[in-house]
Length: 229
Image 1 (tube, helix red, strand yellow):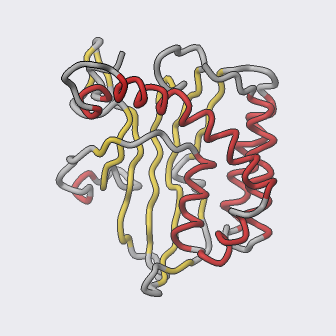
Image 2: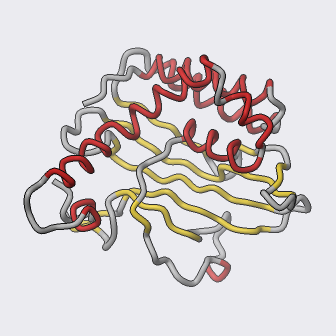
C-alpha cells in the first residue's frame, strides 16, 4: 500500500510542469493547468486521498510535436478525473480513474482520442473488461454523441497512468529531442518516480501474484474487473 501525501505529489507535479516548460514542449495554458492541479494537491497537505482533475475547458495542451514519420501533431490531455484513495489494499489506489488524450493536427483537426479508464461499476457489478484499461475513442469534447467513435471495444489491459505519467508518454512519442534529455535528468526521474509508485506498485504486485499462482488461469482473466481480488 502506498503512502504518498498530497503535498508531496503537488511538489512533484509542479516540478514536472516546470521541466516541460523549460524544454519548450508544453503550451502556456497547459503549464497553467498542471500548476493549478499541483497547487490544489499541495493544499491537501498530508492527506492520502486527493484528486487530479482536468476539465475539458482547460486541458493540458502541448505545443505541436511530430510523429516518427515527421507528421505534425498537437497532443492534449483533454480530460482527467482521478481520485486517489490509498486505503485500497489489493488494487491500485484509485476510487475512480478516467483520463483522455486527444491528438490534433497542426490546424486543429481531430486525429484520434485515447482513453485510460477504470471500469465503471453500478450496483456492485462492473462493465465487461479489465479493471484498468486503454481504449480508442471514448466521448469527444462536447455533447454531440453522434461524433463519438462508434465502437467502444477492445478494452486493452493497461496499468493506470495519471497526469504526470501521461505527460512523459506524450514527450517520449512526439518530442524526441526533449525526451532524450529528460530521461537522463535525475530530478525528472525522481518526480516521475513518485507517480510510478502510485500507479504501478499495486498493479505490478497483482500481475506477479497472477504469474506465480499454481493454477489454471490467465493474467487477463485475473485483471478482469469482475475477477480482481
